[in-house]
Length: 192
Image (tube, rainbow, N blue to C red; front, side, top):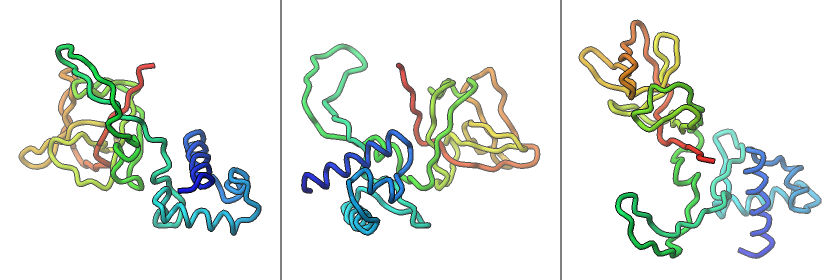
């Protein structure tokens, strides 16, 4: 990849991570110093073929490989201390590692403490994939009798129940309806 193309991809990545959206064609023309939308279209076609962006079913541009990869420098022992060596093992794009199905994944901010036993605390963000088929033992986002919640899905005689990961909460047995909105695939927590 030539230097100019690499710089444009970097600018696109920075725009996406600062704004949370892909730029319009007009914004891209300004970002890349291009004079026409046709030049922007050619650039988009090029980086789409290279796998930096993709399109959803409606043709909307989505990021694919424009995230800044993070260096994986080694491993760390979480048990007994051991000598640490810093060595570049690989680079890793967090969005590719955390999100398998970008078009069907969304994020929710957690409130409440019913899932603390599963390591999910108030203020955490959870990634939810609505394309996965939920199975017993999955943590799911569910609508039960008109109310939304996040719990373990458990199979029981006669159907499914929702179980908290905090003993202070009772098991929820749907009276009328249980609808699964998606399966939780990751938890994100910032410490600072």
